[in-house]
Image (cartoon, rainbow, N blue to C red; front, top):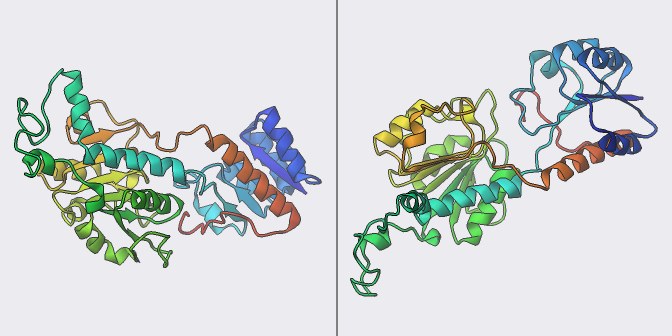
Length: 333
């Protein structure tokens, strides 16, 4: 048996792959032409497969993608091919959930506003006057300043796409006392701590009840361009929108229009329809928007998890066991 790797991996990683794959031969292809030659009698492939490489395969049974998202990986011939495709989902849940809660806390406590005020050396509580003492109105009176700072246990967080990431988001939100809801096309039982999980047809209900809406869905033919102006109008005007799923799910022009019209309280985005976000894009200058440059999955632990997942699937393939993270190729996840 033979496994082809392309693009090639570094020496240390290659040796670990060869150890896990024994007695299967491992070819570390240096270019696409070599990969196409070697895949002719290979049964497994790791990396970025192309139509030309796949066309040369005669015995291919398994392809391991190096990524969790597959919108830039899939092509019709791969969908139709009988090989099993696996991906790297499940590596990022806790890391991205931490990023989401960073957004949530910023909005709840107005930190996005106070950071901008700090740069301007400007002292003014949101909802209050610059000169007013915190307790000037008395400790028993609820003030506009108090109302402008959210108490998370009073809030509902809705998760769109309750996979590994969405479930971790709900878990962390629950630790802050938040009520959590979810919609998902495949999962039917809510993860621990989630109050309710509904099919995607119930998205309007989730939007209407949520103070924070978190998109954690993959980019698929079904989710592309899903969040339009019409969808944003189903949210509370006091709610915040967060996207750490995929940029193509959200139509940015519609999001900008909704924000300008006051149909949303704010938005936080880590992924965008076009990346990098053009410097002239209006989102950059909106005070109720937080932008991060596609870094929600950044962590010193991901490289180790990535290798562990690959090695475990190689071990399972050699042993004839069920593989982890098998993808429905028609659905892209």
